[in-house]
Image (cartoon, one colour):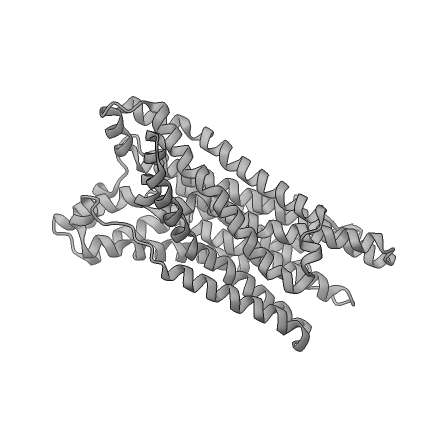
Length: 440
């Protein structure tokens, strides 16, 4: 089959342009935030005075806390509308198109979409950099030149986004190439194994031991690198164990379901725990970072109360500024993640919504089930992620700072705002569900 026929078959169906726009928007947001976060962090690495290592250590930790979740969001962006694309590609396989032809067409489509979004993200970074440069550290603004990335770094990030899109497309094609009929008939079940929990427990235990021992035996630079790496590892393992936790929780809710919306919500989660996790994964990252923010605020209060020197108080003010910036970045990430994933989920499940409508299920029942399938796992996700963050912070600051009233209040406030963002996004995406029912 020639390239023109493939392009015709891969062209979005009428009325599906919104589906194509979603990953473009997601890649644009991801690229903007990644470039801006890296640009802000680089401004500290040119300092050489006695306080420079402290700023650099905090910048490295903040970079990991933000970039790792953003990469996860980038992966989600690359998988947006995967079900619709899998069905079209499985049709091509059933018509006799070779696996190589399907792979080339899909990777090209994914890279083009990611490229459009990444290009918009570069423009967004350049537009935001003057504003980021106004943020004061050490009593003066950072400046535009300090926070804007060089062309070489921008190209590197741009290329990384394209590679992420291409890799996700190739990985997603395995089911289509191996079993096109199973994909077409939706008989391929989404599986998550309990071994994920074992891996997560092992990684967190190792991280706890290393964080407790290494700072006393390693140098400052080595400690910074190790801490940043451990935080990145634990953040990554949260994405591994999250779907399994949601599967276990939904299975219990299914057995206790007494209302149609509760039953449907549990089945939605069990149908694809990985997709359900992507709906709430942003909250997991926000809760994880909330622990660091809370203990940081408590530590700053202790420094102020003990009458620290003027230089230490200035450092405390800068740390507070850094915490605020990190939390704002976290909330932007959460808003982008849940908004795009929920919109994509509604669009990809249009056939299911139409079927439920034809069976006589009211729109309100389906909408309540959809929102419950998102909001119900949030509490488990938020508490579990906060506990993981507490385990890592414990060897560094002690239990007193973690449980200090101001720390607990900060953690609760951050988690509450994050949950509020998710709740608002469930209502913002309701018109898409209404549109699916109107089409039925």
